[in-house]
Amino acid sequence: MKKSLVAVGVVIALGVVWTAGAWYTGKQLEGRLAQMVTEANSQINRVAPEASVVISSQNYHRGLFSSQLELVVKPVEGKENPWLKPGQSIVLHENVDHGPFPLAQLKTFNLIPSMASVHSTLVNNEVTRPLFDIAKGQSPVVVETRIGYGGDSRSDISLRALNSEKEGEKVAFSGGEFRLSADKDGNVVTLSGQAQSALVDAVNEYNQRVQLSFNNLKTEGTTELSSFNERIGNQKLTLDKLAIAVENKEMAVLEGMNLNAKSEVSTDKKNIDSQVDYAISSLKVQGQDMGSGKLTLKVGQIDGEAWHQFSQQYNAQTQALMAQPDVMKDPVLYQQKATEAFFNAVPLLLKGEPVITIAPLSWKNAKGETAFNLSLFLKDPAKTTAPAQTLAQEVDRNVKSIDSKLTIPMDMAVEFMTQVAKLEGYQQAEAEKLANQQVKGLAAMGQMFRITTMENNTIGTSLQYANGQVTLNGEKMPLDEFVGMFGLPALGQPGLGAPQAPAVPADPAAPTAPVVPQQ
Image (tube, rainbow, N blue to C red; front, side, top):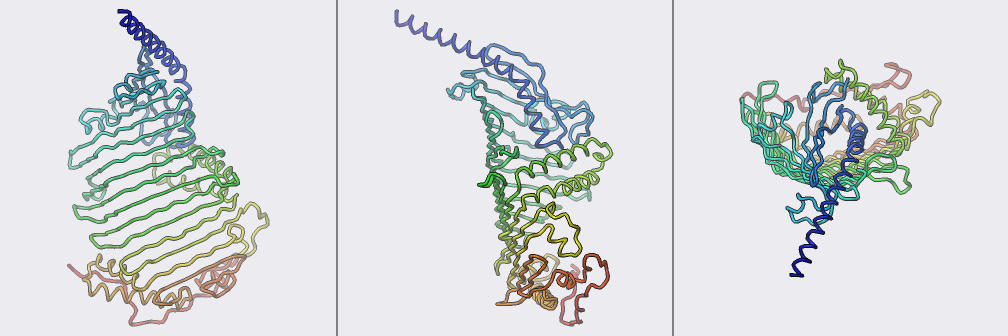
């Protein structure tokens, strides 16, 4: 009996402690809610000002073991929003189980103490109703979030399967599972997950039926806030297959797509270095094998403070555009103005004299591989105040040096152009003959203009530039002479005195524009 009383006493004591802890963490969450909403809005304004939305909370009800509230996403008052009309909103219902042992966690046998566990679902309203319809009346997204006492959080995001077919249009989505983790300040964020498949079948503006589908999308990566208040990190994305069809005829299939991107602060803590690796294992166009490709692009020595200034200036100009209803109503005008804003801010990025490297950009088929390599060293134009008097001086304000090389195996080029000709309707033998003529003609023309060379059955060209001097395929010349090879005027002499490119003599064997045979 005594042991039983002790056991009951222990259970009661644990219950009291749990109840007190749950009440305390509920109070903590209530006190931090306004701060969390403010921080979320600050992040949106900094990272995606073009979204033109603001988050608020409403209907908060705190209980002993759980609390409920709603998070509301609505347009910023006075700004045009591309997704939400005035008065519309997206609402998330949040069910918060208090710590130290939230009931939602106990259901999954997770006994790690935490401040709260949050179950988030979309609320069915005017904006989200179409998603609820194709999700069979359920919330199309469900998020389970664990919030630790240190403020770290982990969210498991479930995208439900969607299936809709009406008025001749079809949408099918397998669903997906993603995990988003963040530290207490939102500085370090990790995202990973996958979605198996999706299909969109609809009619475009030309009244053609278009089908777009993908298979096995995966992503993983981590980003963190640098000392320059800009995000750096790494991200990986893979996609097994992407297919596009028109009127049930397969137009293009891309397989084995891989994207790896990373950015980091340099060892001197002043610059940001980044690299993007992109690869496609196979591209087929209308059933023709066009080959595979890859790209490695590096951008180094981007001044961190200048990058932050660039982001601020571009975001400010973008926000100013969104405050203009006439601009927001015209997508073409908005894109034009946004592009202008981007290029107006680009000079800021030259402060650190960045280096751009492509090594390589290549395309490969069964007959060989074409490769292009480039190293571009840039200058900060702000360091030169004197006006440019010559073309070389104008270029040298922005460019320190260029080194590039292109190689095209003849057999590879003939194979590629053969596939292109077959797409245009030629049979194999005719396509090979035409492709051979075209490639030989282009090679001869390149040599005639001194742009390319021919060695070991490979078309090649190399170009270097520094201090007003160009070296083209080993031949040195001033920049003005190089520009004159293409019939372009020198700086200060528009249309006058520029040497013209040599005329190309008529060649009866030269290829003509292909004519598609009648089917």
